[in-house]
Image (cartoon, rainbow, N blue to C red; front, side, top):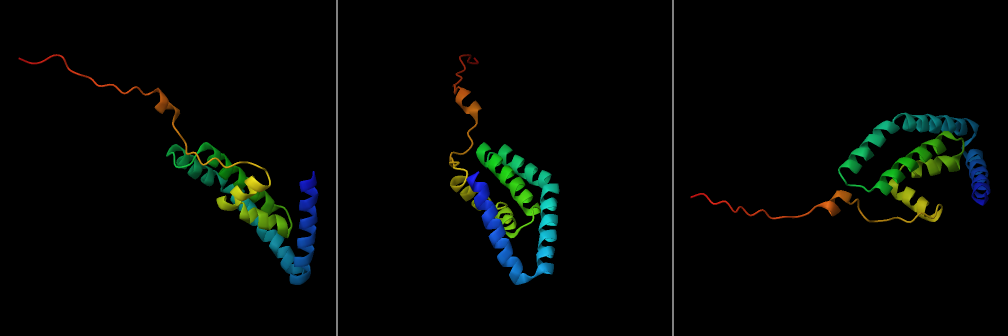
Length: 137
């Protein structure tokens, strides 16, 4: 609950300061443009999802990274839809995995596991050597 009040305070303070400097029309334009960008990101999320799914299948990212990349991409798009400058700044930053990782560590207290994806089937492999006893005469 405390994070919501901190967010609300920062949103109002930043929005009032920026809106008073750039004017009403520019503020309105920014709100409309950021909402269109947020809806566009949500509409194209399936392509991003398929790209991260392909990376997961190729074992270039872990399951945790797959979940994090997709979750923060959606959260960032939703923040872009919300009116306000602070939410737009956060929404744009969450589209980049570097900032999403910082956000997860500092705000959500999620530890980043650097262990790469390991195929569980590798533990069940038995290495054998076959020796042919039948010799041809």
